[in-house]
Amino acid sequence: MTKNVTVTDENGTYVGTTYPKRAKGLVKNGRALFLDDCTIRLSGKTEPSDDKINQSEVKQMNYIYFNPREWSYEQTQYNTQYNNGNGFCQPGFHSQASVERCYINDFDGGLIESLMFGGWDEAYTKVTTGHFSFLPDTEYCFVFWLNGGENDRNNEICQLQISYSGNPGDCCTYKLNRNYIKPLLHKQGWELYSIPFVTPASEQPTVDTRFSFVAGNAPMAIKPAKDPTFYKEWEDEPDEFAQWRPQRHNLVFEDGWPDITMYGGDKYSTEVLRSRKRQFVSPQHRQMMQGMAENVQQAAQGVAENVQQVAQGFAVNAKQMAKDLAQSTRQMAEHYRESAEQRKNQAEHRAELAELLTEYREKQTELTTRQEELSERRLDLQMRYNELLKQYRVSENEKSRLNAGFDETADEMPALSALHALDAQFTCASNMVSTQDVPIEASEGVLNGIESQLNSVTGMCSKREEILDELETILNRITEQA
Image (tube, rainbow, N blue to C red; front, side, top):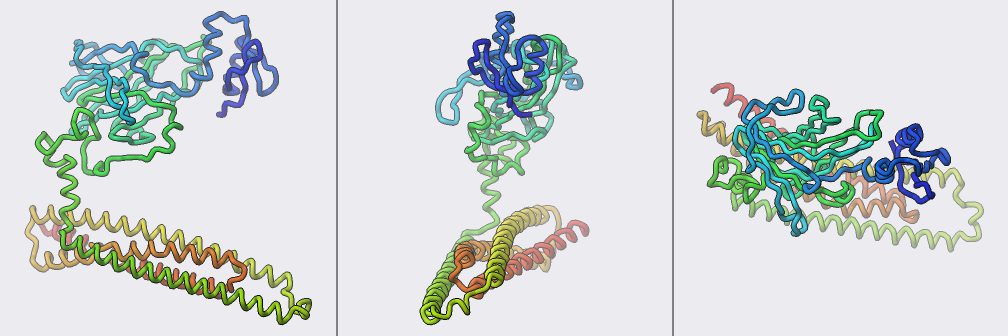
């Protein structure tokens, strides 16, 4: 629903915009009048408190921003069983040390006030706002940055609860862990959330609303966020090792995760995972791959330059031929001028070549993605092979074939470099197709060359995939025989 109804105060001063349904509700309750189909004027006869709500509704009915100072939070730690079936906790004992409001560094290096609460023990911490008065039957979004809230046992509680009219049973619960709700953005270990909710319908002018965060078995932190559109140019920064970690970034650790000397750090620390990612490529192999990549890149660059020169030569020759033809046949131009049908056919032919060029660009993108997927698959199979060597007896023939297969599929650079080298050829072909002076046959020749290179890379990918299929079959046979 779009805010397309203009709102003015009793004097005609512009206040903002609102939703059509909300505008009808204000008129029905006697708090506004329709000036036309798309404009309402707030009434001056309402009580001061209602007038304040009316004039601030534009701010309330879209984004609600987390602010630790506005939260009248309670610090409670429960030692009884947590009940998340109806959205509230059973009574327990209090611990003032479980909740802390403090300043921390923000993304720009400045200080920002945050709320930090919860712990690793078998307890639950609930922090709650004061009472907010929101418009009934209205859409809102609660925006905030979240850090932590997960542990390596996968038994944590990390929730946002929104309750209405002081009724714990009328409570909406949002699970903020394990990607039950995907964040809008990752930044330096923080996750940006915009939680949508709709207040219930009510005959009263406002709905009493409270927010609560619940943390259990893992500490978490919340800090203020701005309008999500503020971050639209920000680059997403997810954890590069997220697939191998049992929990997400947490501020309680210096690096966001346990270091190598701490519990779990021997498996999940950044130092260990980076070493794990590098261990399958020896320095000699990396040097060889780099050399091959440089050779392929130079060769591709040479091909691109040659294609460019050929294309320029075609363009110059075609232009000269056209000029000579025009000079020699100027007097007979009316007899040999191209018919309208011929021009139409040429235009259609160039349009077909342009479509074919677009198809080849898409194939280039698909092949690049396929190469990256094959590299990920190879890495997974290599890790699986290393684990099998520790658990089972592998014959020398199988070791020999596996090692040879991993060596054969290790080098992805020739294919990727060849794909990158096509960029120059695509630019050249695009210029030739769109230039009327260049013969269509010349454009077709360049496109045929591009197709040939794409087919070559496709063959390389298929060969690599075939080898990986064979390696996976061997690994499956070793596992079944054991």
